[in-house]
Image 1 (cartoon, rainbow, N blue to C red):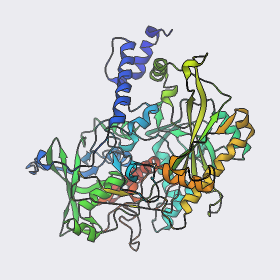
Image 2: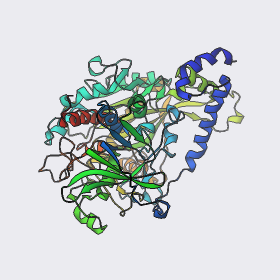
Image 3: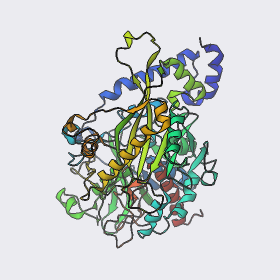
Image 4: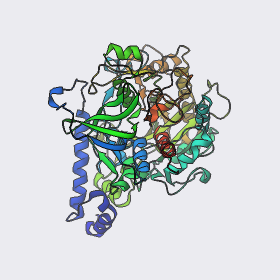
Length: 618
């Protein structure tokens, strides 16, 4: 029996900053969290944002006579936007406005275990693709979801928490495209500047303490973790710090948590700015248009909706768009920046004819392999005890990042030289529960341990686009991810090769000792193929794969001669003065990793660029 009075003081001391309100006793405090979790699990499956036009009549579209004026206006408070807001407001003489369409995170969003459930909440924009042709074939109308954060903190409030920088060659390729200042040696100091690393078994030359984003290993580990590592060793897969010198191999997951709790950009970069009088943060503020002088081609402000009214704010120095790789191209196009002919069809006056919205690239994940470990026992857990352990110690299942281990592998079909991985493998532990548990003699043993495998295509050849459906900011854009559409079928062959590589784990002595086997879950629409044949897996990949919500390239960086380029290497939009894009939209290459860390890096580097441009010593 847990002694609640004994731990009461510990919880209040540790978490008064979490709740902000003292409770009479610890049971009431735990009850509050239990109720919040229950509400999340109840509401998440019911959340279904509809792609409907806004009723313009509900807004007073008369522009306010009291126009606010700032030096800088930042659109979007995600990873990059929060960084820029923090860094620019370090200059007391500069007045900054940060606009965000969503609201603030709460303490339930900070529980890592429920990250997946957050995707079905108000913190997600709720976008879906248009009907797809080569993938997403198992979904209704062949439309797949692509989640993007809508909150102070953006996607760092709802993502899977993995902190991965990518491969150094990604950034060297970025620079080789004509983008001076973006090779790995240029961006590496900014990656280090971001992080406050508290890791085990890590490459110390590639990390630092003291940054604003806390990075740590998962605060709970599956009993299968050591077995997976032994099996990897038997397959000659090296153990690595994948954010260190070498990426090819397997390593402990690194995530943006602090003492087992989500550490978003809002926590890391904005919380400390609350008392800065020169930074104004306005949540629930949807920017409808960037104001641009058609004669001088100079951005001078924004229109935005807040509290059901249309407001105007002006910027004397710059407008900075950090709305993310889906919303940034939408806003640019609505403001007259994009493909001229497309804008004309929607009766939008084109101000700068640029290839906004393409090439849209993102990572594709295939979750079709499951390892079941028959020689293990999964026992029933006490949910309340797990919650108390999380609140008191920041440990246990609720503090766990969804995957203990991450591997970066090079498939047999890769054409790249050297140790340059082309797939990521996520090892997601879960419990395979027994059927007919009421008939079992041991009621505490509920199943066996298992691992769900997701194989992620890191550098797809296929790319898509994002276009306006109409001229209304309330209408979701037309998102075509166009996965697995390359004519050479290189993308699907790479994922297939990844499947074959991961299947080798089951033949290792370590997996055999655990009684491991691959569960033959047959995809209904693929029953016409022999299970485990190449044709079967290709069918399964086209039906089951999902997007990892890592879009890039929709406001691509490039030199003036690059016909797809939207911004230059200083992140300035071609043809428009005083306008920058500072988010993952600008990334011109596929990154061999997840996109949170690159967004933080872009925000830090952009902040120095802006300070230098306006003659403030960096």
